Image (cartoon, rainbow, N blue to C red):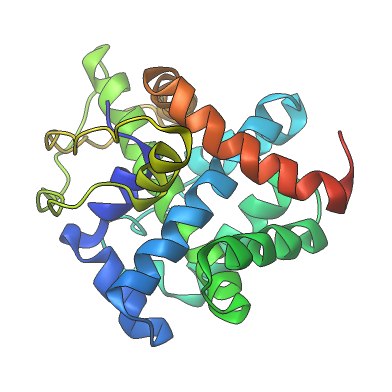
Amino acid sequence: MTNLFDLMRTAQGGAAFDNLSKAFGLSTEETQKAVAALVPAFAMGLQRSAARPEAMDALVRMMAGGAFAGAWADPKTAFSQRSRDTGADALTTMFGSPDYVKRVSEQAAALSGVAGEATGKMLPILASTLMDGMAMMGAQMNAAGGGAAKPRPEPAPPPPSGNPWEDMFASMMGAPPKPAPEPEPEPELPGDPQAAAEAAFDAWRKMIDAGREMQDAQIAMMRAMMEGVWGKR
């Protein structure tokens, strides 16, 4: 099972980071740092949604309705205004208001050292891309259960470098970083969008379970930083 950082890294034929760098005038290193800070923020949003059934239901409906379709595979779709808008809607659903989303992006900017304007604009694009990637993972799970499916474009294998966020925490906690995962086969489109969307969130929970100690540490640090902004909820 891949993790969210690798799901982002393999997006758009393996060129997602390059595309973000060009779009925001960042170096590859700056983009990696920004994404490494934003991915745990996104995961924290999913965790918050999991505790609020109405938020999770809204995200499932958005995914099943194809709100994010194409963002994982196609950079033009990912950077379109529609994708930015649907990504922003998803983030608002996760965190409760656009103001909280802005504050999350500001904290990610502080963590990564990348300008807040860039991280703020990058976050909705990242959200749509990851939601579409998760939808395809859910489609793969749904297809494995017998749903009809069509093949999607095959992604390029991930670059050899690991997750800089995990490396950062490994160094801080005195633990060795996890090795880069093996490339996984590309998911397929679902026969039942609703079932695939629900399966996508099951896939996300398994991602968290697969590396719970490290990923919980990442999300806990982001949450601790945000508690001063929105309080414990």
